[in-house]
Length: 196
Picture 1 (tube, helix red, strand yellow):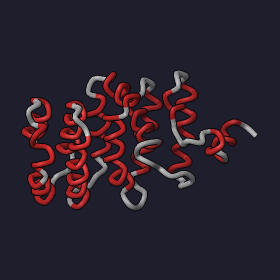
Picture 2 (tube, rainbow, N blue to C red):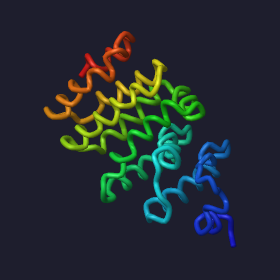
Picture 3 (tube, rainbow, N blue to C red):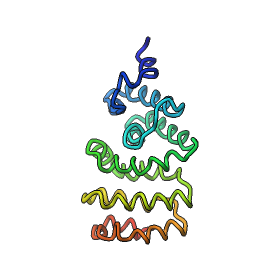
């Protein structure tokens, strides 16, 4: 049995914690092959997608130095967005938290100029106006109180203002004022909201 077949059929034996750290391997071939395997397993519903693990790791590949890997990650999200139950919408808050708060992930994202904005801008393009944006505002506003880190507040503010807003979601954003009002002392956080 080849290594590829072992990974596909027995992922839990090869990687019991379900972490996708091999997507960070220095060898381009390893990253490319693991991304292809994870893409196949997630899209065929053989393994569960989770925002703080596998899918957040795939989101990091949107910033990969190798254009083929970045392109494959974009293709993954394009296909993933077509699945029932709006999977990107459901996982986005966890993906944002992982990219912003997880030290190893945020270091990778911040190493690329505007890396966080590039990833989140791409992911929010799959959300539809209306209920998705309205509900996402609530979820993201709640996360302001979970961290005192200004970078996390900036990331949350950018994500909130990147959503495809309609009247109801803007109203929700105004109602959530108490969650983020104390964070607006930072110029960059404030500029995200004023640019909206």
